[in-house]
Amino acid sequence: MPQQDRIGLRIGFIGAGRVAKGLAWGLAQGGESVVAAASRDPASAAQLAARISGCRAAATAQDVIDGSDLVFVTVPDDAIAAVADSLNWRKDLAVVHCSGATEVAALASAARAGARIGGFHPLQLFADPDVALAGLPGCTVAIEAEEPLLGRLEQLAQALRCRTIRLPPGCRARYHAAAHYAAGFVITLLNEAVELWRSFGVEREDTIRALLPLLRGTAASVERSGLAQGLAGTYSRGDIGTLEKHLADLARFGPDALHLYCELGLRSIPLGLERGAYDAQRADAMRALLQRALNS
Ligand SMILES: NC(=O)c1ccc[n+]([C@@H]2O[C@H](COP(=O)([O-])OP(=O)(O)OC[C@H]3O[C@@H](n4cnc5c(N)ncnc54)[C@H](OP(=O)(O)O)[C@@H]3O)[C@@H](O)[C@H]2O)c1
Image 1 (spheres, rainbow, N blue to C red):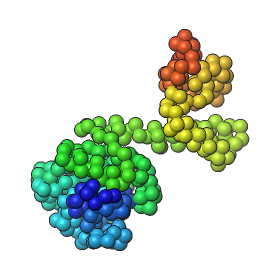
Image 2: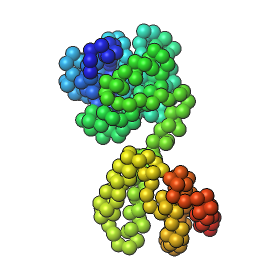
Image 3: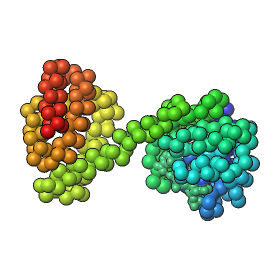
Image 4: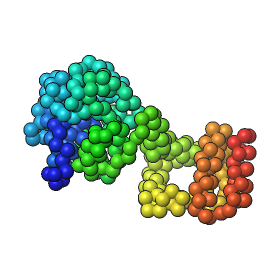
């Protein structure tokens, strides 16, 4: 990244786990000054610092604060407030955490000391630090802060080659809950398919192998064409005969599977309508079938 685009702050990390290492290494590669890290286990901080020239493993979290202008508190969510409350902050500091669901107010003790506080949540799964580093470019960072920190954090996201969205105060839990629909809940839905196919003898691994290309195709279709035009299958066409077959079979399989299917089906109809593949009358007929099965 060009020198003039650097935010020019000394950046420190308290908590040197997967996200801290990924961010610190990425920021250093982007030309930012990552100067210090501390963690519960000194070995974690040493690992983070070892890959950044000019970065030191600090003996304590307070050391990090004292030598930094911007501090990332990258400890587990439940420890953020306790860690923040245990330290001495100062008014020319900026302090952020990287949790999706935790309110920025977890850093209130830093704000009381006059520091600017914010949230910097990279919307990606980080299984280990190198996965974190590799997964950052192209992902979105959700940023909550007031100016001038907001602009600085957006610059940092650019240094990581990430996109940004701004989160207004008070909406983090909803933001985080929604992200499950593109992450953990996809796995929950795959597990639902595993159970259905198991009923006629297909093993879990074979089901996953069979459905993964479909999942990748679905993601590619959304990327290429958007939600409505990317929709495929029964609800993209309004195939009422096929829908009736699904409902009759799932009613025999069990009420849980039937109800989940109906809830998802009802939410798919607006996308089919938006796609322009069928009219409101057909949509109403599909809704009526699904609603009747849901109430059965
Ligand atoms: N992993 C993800 O996919 C992901 C994605 C986006 C955001 N986040 C967020 O990023 C933050 C960090 O998550 P992570 O996945 O990086 O967690 P992690 O890998 O478990 O790392 C947390 C680090 O904090 C250190 N630590 C724990 N308690 C501490 C304390 N009291 N004082 C100082 N250091 C302490 C840990 O201990 P040691 O020093 O013993 O190693 C560890 O190095 C969380 O807020 C999380 O919600 C995670």
